[in-house]
Amino acid sequence: MDIKKHIPNTITCCNLLSGCVSCVMAMEGNFIWALAFIVFGAIFDFFDGMVARLLKVSSPLGVQLDSLADDVTFGFAPSFMVFVFMRGLEFPDYLAPVAGILPFVAFFIAALSAMRLAIFNIDKRQATTFIGLPTPANALFWASLVVGYGNFIYSLNHGWLLMIGLILLSCYLLVADIPMFSLKFKYFAWRANKLRYSFLIASAPMLLLGVGAAVPIISLYVAVSIIKSLRKKRAA
Image 1 (cartoon, helix red, strand yellow):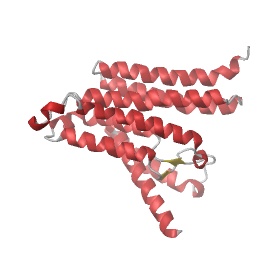
Image 2 (cartoon, one colour):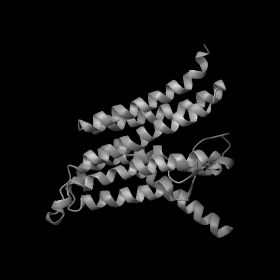
Image 3 (cartoon, helix red, strand yellow):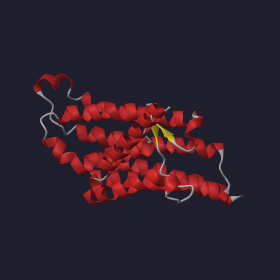
Image 4 (cartoon, helix red, strand yellow):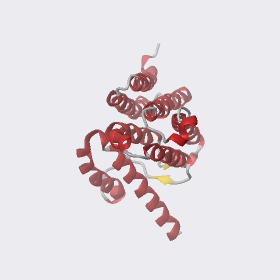
């Protein structure tokens, strides 16, 4: 039995398990640990493909398993986290008949994340870059928003409207035909990676925000990607 070929899939399963535990943490209202396990899942997701390439054991099974794990950890887990969070929001009196239903809008995140992953698997353009917001980035945005800015959103008179608006926006960005630059380095020369290095330098001070850091970092990532795309279209 060749144990080596099972190592990447084992790492991928650790990603999936992290997503499952994140859901349990969210269900118990422990949003900090829910965020932590999404981060753990992202770390496993980073290493499973790398290990598969290093060991030269990439397989179609691994590709499918990776997508399934990603939709649990970066699709369902953050959407469930947002669902639990939204159940604590105050809705105006005129929405009382549907106040118990509106938090379910959060699960659009899981549905569009699945769509995003399916598109990624068949889109040949995404071999070296991304089209649409990557699911790990979207998941980290939502988990960081709930943990870092949850109390602020609860204090708003229309926090429910902000949440629904952000959910619809993120769902659009997941499947939008917008090129998003990759942070993967093939080599480290400044000239070839000017955008990546500039983004990392600009993002570094935001880490001081702690658990809320992913919100401005992912927002900056999306903004820079859109600006880069628009400039490329104008130059064409």
